Image 1: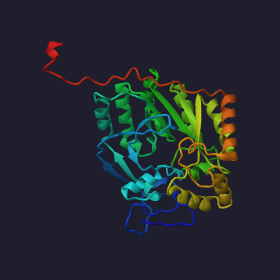
Image 2: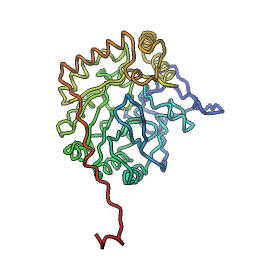
Image 3: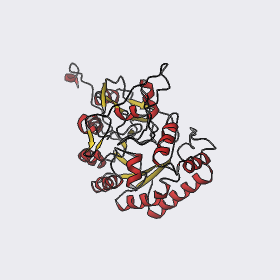
Image 4: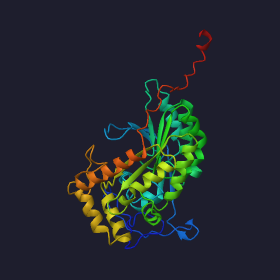
Length: 359
């Protein structure tokens, strides 16, 4: 389904709905506004849910430039609608669009906790920190009702399995009871993603995510509960959000954050076209400058997928960003997080009723 717009759509990041690159046929249909309102005064396209019985739930990777080798994603697609999201192209594997479909057609893995329990109980499983939020946000709005992330956390807490969480959703405060108990045994670390403190830029960039100030309040709330919490300044967009690096880090430190990281803007596959379309619709006067600086930081291209370079970029501008970030972190006293505890991992023993009498 293809929908084009010269102007931004209310409460959505993408301005269009390009066909999946895997489709042999193209489709064209009108997208109608739904009856449900996201906020009192704005209407958005109605979210459609479908449910998947996942055959497996832990995804493994061998990427040398990310600090985890396994993750769980409870949802496909994300209501937050962040225009820069590198996970958008994964929706095309479902025959859906990386544009509006990614924000409005969400797949719920409602057996995620059950599958996780099975996989953690395998005799050959060896624990290591497991990431939530590596692809789509585990605390997007529909989690309020679906509670899949909550169920996954309950399994991890029961097994005493270490977990890292990345989110820009305020709903994580609901699970402070679980997270605080896990933190007592050094089993959890949370990173709150904040790209900018400018509310208008954030509203356009991440239309259904919590506001920057709300996210900063979550940093404070989690920290006060004894949960190790940091901030990830992501993405850093040249000539649009890079001016807020120091401000985000300073406010995060004042709010109790103990660690920080950043990611330079990435535009893999179809995300590039969606982002450029968004720029021209929302910030036409900056579009050329933003993309010029991005290319200067990506060897003349919009995106580079090389390990070690894709997160930070290269060139003079990217090096300046890295220096600013590093110097600010050092000045504010951010530290490298200590390794999470894997020694407490305790899967339930298999039930062997016939043999118990001999033990």
